[in-house]
Image 1: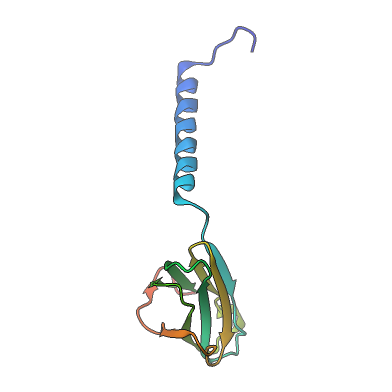
Image 2 (image 1 turned 180 degrees about the vertical axis):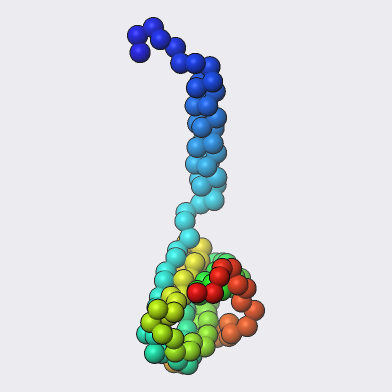
Length: 137
């Protein structure tokens, strides 16, 4: 720009935008690395016990958030032991067969399966206490 100045209102808007962007970047830096998020969809015709294991390979406790369709449940996984969370799945038409999304703090290893959970893990039944977070489809 040769000798031209931006209007004061434009400069003020740019300063505000830089502050907001800087704040978002700072919040992300303070929050640490992003959570591990994994999604799994069992076959639509599957019914019975299904499970997800969360292995805190770093040995720390962590929050684990599970979202299944419009339902959500958050649990605190204490200690450094692998936990097998069990749920009951009913058969569903393919267009209503929701995936289970699991989010945990960084350092978690997440696996899914059906039937009895793997031996040797602490088992936690998650069939109750879910909160609806969205509309039923």
